[in-house]
Amino acid sequence: MAIEETGANAGAARAVEAAGTYATRRYPVAPGYRLNVRSGPGTNYDIVDVLPYGARVPVNCQKPGEWVTGPYGTSNLWDNIANGQFVSDAYVNTGSDGYVAGRCT
Image (tube, rainbow, N blue to C red; front, side, top):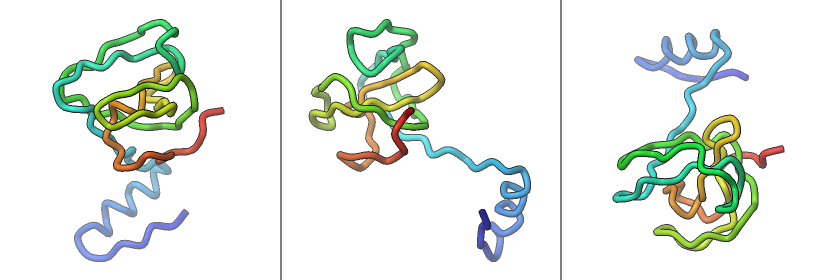
């Protein structure tokens, strides 16, 4: 995949392309929440971590699951933030009510 950049960012873009990796966008968790991280897409899954206030998370892929109501509405989308770690999209400010990443397989 080619990156087209000019000016000051051109060197950094070429370095990233050469390395074959790209920076993952991180999304903010709703302010004032310590968010439970679950082992799957629902509140019936085990809590594997708790995110601190002010956390920002990557969204590697998304998966439908349990419906949850949070500060960003009601959603059944769950965001995979690491291997075996999911958070409800209703608590993550992705700027969208739909998918912002591919579906988890």
